[in-house]
Image (cartoon, rainbow, N blue to C red):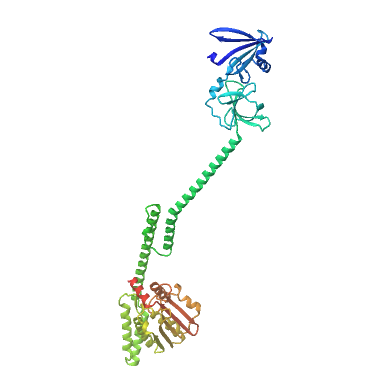
Length: 501
């Protein structure tokens, strides 16, 4: 192993003689050579720092003068006299370059890069083609510019190139041999190519991410937006009062669960509203039944008293008519609970009530009627006109002096709706008072029925026919009061009747 690695040891005396010791056929042969024949050793000797006491004076690559086909590295060391520091000679040791090149054969060096080995003597050797050779184009020694750039122990150095810009080197120290370094040239062109490659790769990745984001956005838009829009539209329909179920919202996914929840919610709300309407209708029916049963004792007393005086003064004249009207009125009050009836029947009840009041006031109150025969079948809530006439007599004509005229008119408007007008020439009222009559505060237990005032009449009309319909009052103080009932036409009225039934 020793012979395979170390070619031969040489020794030089201070007088310039070289002694070559080589091994041939297991015999030691000493050959004395003239210094001039191996003059390159003199260069080695002058270059060495002889104060060093270890193998550290490496020289550049040279050709073995005995075997020209081989490259060698020479290591030199001074020899000092025993017990003193006097140099008596030099020892030279030639080492095959294969010591380094064999371990570098598997190292890849790109075409644009160069790989160097720096010896402790500052000589720079270039490794190419599996061999080492001295670089002729490098000058000076490398200088450290950065430390620990890549990993611990890695240096970045720089060599000045003759006639060109400095060459950047990545330097790796060899721990086993002090001051021995491996260096790899940094190719700026290759770095720029790699940077451009990485930049393009980064752009491609960014573009791919953007395209992927757009694709995902489009997919989500097609998968999410239509269901969300349908759910939003359905909620708007529910907000507008449409509680009908929407089976098309019940998809087989999470949105379908929301759709089923919305359908259940709308059905529950619709059910509650129907129950509320039914409860209110039942409540109104009960109130109406109670009103029918609450005949004012004062009214009956006045009526009977009037009959008594009529019988006394007139010898029973007119008693029959008054009694008949009272009987018919009481009969209609007590019969059935039908909410709506034709206008002609309501006017017949009003006539019976007028007959009683006419005899009570001695004929000072006149009733005039202007009726369109085509509107007499229009439906109207029971006992709507009687409270209006009662208010006209008691609050309009009677305060005036007991004499007056009441006009009852029924016509069809251009819109197709029906207007029933009851006008008296009593004392009238201010517009503020007229508006107050339709409020809840105006309710008072007076007349034939308790708490059956104008506000209640207006509520009943709107409950049966809707907000556009109802009772309105127009009055002029000291002149007249006109009460107008607006009813829908026969077609709308019939549809409402069927719904209430």
